[in-house]
Image (cartoon, rainbow, N blue to C red; front, top):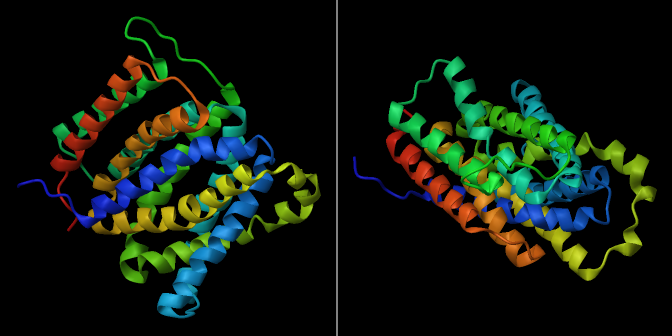
Length: 297
């Protein structure tokens, strides 16, 4: 079968570019705003944005009783829990290291899918291992020694927890995406997840130093709301719906690549030759897994 770059690939590629840039962008805002306030206000605004798009395109259709609990579960897992932990982890660890650790989500997704009876070919598993090796090169930054470091151990462990949540979130969602539609699932699950965080806003609002926010902070905050929050989830869901979880989740490996590029441009970080080699290995693994995994039935 001749490899083809499909529209689902485009959606996922746009998503990982946006999310890769989100790590240094959010890190910049977290230098001023506490992580819980950042996560709760960011996703409440993102949810209103996405629901506005949903109502504009499809009208207001309330969830049916049988879909209410799954949508609440997606909101709690993918928004409330995951984003509160992600923001806290980013405030404790480094942006580049966090993007690397979250790139382990395809490993968790494949493990979860294997427990559900799905099998991948040996070349596909080889692509996963190859990409993970590239991820290690990026973070280790050495070919001759183990130099992994930077960030706080608690933050690193929290990033791994986020990776698992994201994998579970992506594995469970496709049946609902197919039946209800990408925009519908994205909008309602994000709204439910954001509403579950509103007590944080009421409790902690006065603790946030809003006066210290400069124009650049507000612009960065808007980026995390509209692009990374609302449209990012919408594009990711649409890519999964079109390609299936096995071929979609491997794109997560590209997030640290774009995070490094953004960190150089936005935060002035230095990227070594070893890290560039690692980025190339990540992309090679992505290609191998993408083209050796059959499409879903």
